[in-house]
Length: 75
Length: 541
Image (cartoon, rainbow over all chains, first blue to last red):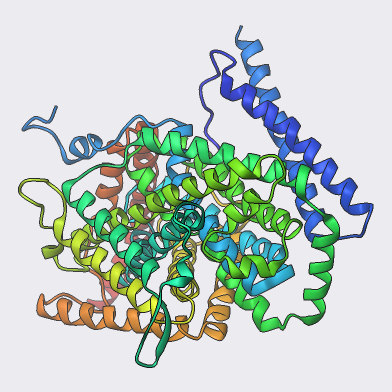
């Protein structure tokens, strides 16, 4: 097993909202970095960071979504 | 409350607290998250435009180290960390070598982070007092350019930490949570606003291109080996495991989130920094690189710069404090396992703190800082030593991880390093950790880089380990204990005690079941083999 399950969430907290917001911001930032970089040159570090932010944002949104889903199922 | 009837496990349990995933995460972040404040300038000065690549290379290896630590810390939730894993897997001798390497890191941790903290304090000197730290430089015989003001500040910080720890002011989980949260918000803001308002991809691309064509490979190797120090502090995961209730549930989540956050910030800061400022500016301001980035952000720089400097100074000082605390915890664990003298664990009658370890290792940190100030670059010298201790310790931990999969397959592993090959060993199917092998090769490569490129680290680091080994041999000989062999331990009972103390009752059950099944199998094998033995014996008669 990779992770042991935490008990399902009892409410949607400020931390969850913060995480979702951070996910959206990370995706936006990833897109901005990739767009601005590719407009000039293919810079490996910028591409790496751009994709990392995109991946991080998607992961955060997926986490937030699964918590919301758990909460809805519990209710 | 403790009663006379309490078992050892119950007493240990009293040390444990209800730390949430967030609390545990910020605990680690207050330690590991501070590293970037010290390492960024050093790595950019060495690797120039290739700094993001140096961070990424070291970061990938660090992720593997982190996953290894996560497995071991959740399997053996004790504060000894690397040296305990090495002792369990490889025996007393290697447990001591790992402990010596980590002890070097803790003392350097005290010195390096106190120096770096003073560096961020110095950010304010020109604006507040109209002076610059480079004005106060002295020469001592053949040694020139000793920054006496910075040296005095560092000594004051280290001695203050020493006295605070002797008096027993405990770093509270709440303080870590608050500081960790502020630091996360600030670092996120600096990276976000830096990318949005000040970042020029042209500058980053041009610095990258210049470095690709002009930077010698040895400089890049030097930079990437220094980059490992921006990720050091994973031992705090083990310490958190020792003091957390239900560590098997909390620790894997905490440490994996911590590993990836630190990685993203390290690569993110170097990328945003080189898109805002030329690498030379970082090389000239090696002591406060993050504040230099924050200061350069339009609209926010006037407030973000000083705020980052204050936070950098604070969080670095807390990180230096973890060095003082870590050294005392490590020596306590080493003395309990008969690797060093128990004399070090003498508790102060009034303050109830391990006063001897605090004084000895704080003063050792102060001496290391003093010696480093006599070299051309204080931060560079300390970074050299830090990288040596960390890579040596991590290398031994990887070997222990692989060996323990075979030697102790019965301990429940709430988290396992991913990507394993199933191999049959003594009738059991064991998961052979392929990522563990990859991590071992990666850390060995970094250690090779350290020895190959660090003029001071390659001499002073091994010298420290040799001195410690001389002590170990003499001490074990005097106490009539084996030097290369190991003292017998009842690991199975200890594992049950540790898991019971951590309130991981389902893991205790799983462990007992695994042991019972093993015993049943052994009994079955013996009974199967017995008739043959009888015949054999009869024939002999």
